Structures are given as C-alpha cells and as structure tokens.
Image 1 (spheres, rainbow, N blue to C red):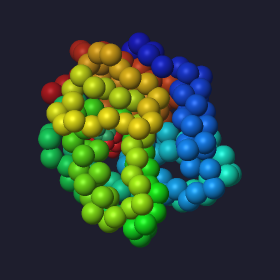
Image 2: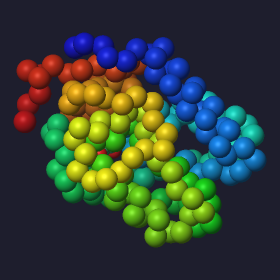
Image 3: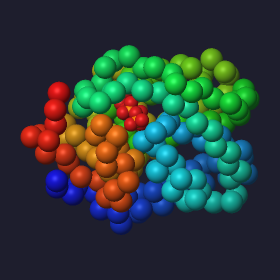
Image 4: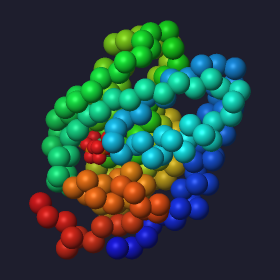
Length: 177
Ligand code: PRP
C-alpha cells in the first residue's frame, strides 16, 4: 500500500479547515452533521479544530451506498436519521470523501427539507473524477486527481483500515469486485 497523505498533512488540512470555519461562523451556532461511519474520525478532529467562538453541536446520520464493493451502488440507504431539529439552524454536512456525489446529494436534499438557516458541505477528500451529479464541497481538505481507491483515516475497504492514521492507495490486486 502506498501512502498518499500523511498523518501530519491530514492534521494540517484539518487545522486549516477548522480555522476557516471558525472565521466564517464566529459568534454563531453550527450543527455538524456527521455521516457515519467513515467521517467520524475527521469530524472528531475537525470539531476540536474549530474555535470556541463558534458554538458547535454534533449529530449523526448513517447511510450506506457501497456495501463491500469499491464502486458506489448508486442508491443511498438511510440507516439512521437525524435526531436534532435543524430548522432555522446553520448546518454543515461532514464527510470523509465525496466521490460520485450521490450520498451528499441525497443528504443535502434530506436536510434541505428541514429548512436549515444555511447548509454547507465539508469533506476531507474530494474525488471529482467519478462525479455523477453536480456537487462541490464548500470546505475540502484534499482533491484527488486520479481514481485511486483510498483507505485509512475513516475510509474503509470492507470495513477494514478505518483506524489507520494516514491515507493509502489500496493496490488494485487487493480489490475484489
Ligand atoms: C462512503 C463515504 C461517503 C460516500 C461517498 O460511505 O463515507 O459517505 O461513500 O461516496 P459517493 O460520493 O459516491 O456517494 P460508505 O457508503 O462507504 O459508508 P461508510 O462511511 O460507513 O464507510
């Protein structure tokens, strides 16, 4: 496995995004909506990189589109829904990776219906080459130029590797379709 993003590089991007969010939401309340499971690692770091000048609350949604494969199935299944009443609140969707965009689009539509004051998208990794719908993150750590299947820092392959501190390219021969 080849390392693509080190723990230090990831931490630097998290700090940068946290500082940006701190500036953009100073004095406001922001609800972080974390998309389980993958984004929990990034979200935990991001929340702590946001200044105390922003009041944060955290909630979770759980969706699944990939099962154990490396390609999106194209359908997004809601496994758990939001508990927080987000109407009139500033909301940020927090993802580990934006790939086809189908998950983000479904979640965006689901959250928009609840009439938040604002809704922004934040992802650690953006992989625009696979995009199936038009969607762009408002806050992003890294943009992947190729079509690598990446693992680590929350990202899994068949539930493995989420706990790695750095992010790696999974070798194609390790991928089973
Ligand atoms: C991954 C990732 C995003 C989604 C992105 O989740 O965490 O939620 O896929 O892909 P898309 O842009 O093509 O929709 P996954 O369904 O693998 O669940 P997980 O977070 O539990 O690993």
